[in-house]
Length: 75
Image 1 (tube, rainbow, N blue to C red):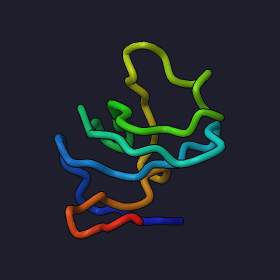
Image 2 (image 1 turned 120 degrees about the vertical axis):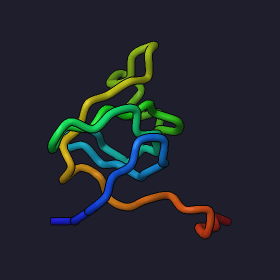
Image 3 (image 1 turned 90 degrees about the vertical axis):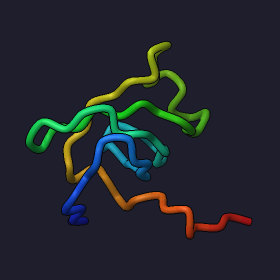
């Protein structure tokens, strides 16, 4: 299990809900205990049917993998 101690509103995180095939990147919109609402930024096409037009999704803290700090570089 991955532990993310201080999930902050407005920050970006990589998230993997159990019903998604791949991770997505999202911005935290609200935190209520162990429930977090994300606005999805990027997701894989295989999960397109799980994302509605609002791009908002509610997940549990265990679904959050790690923060997307500006120090990450993808090639």
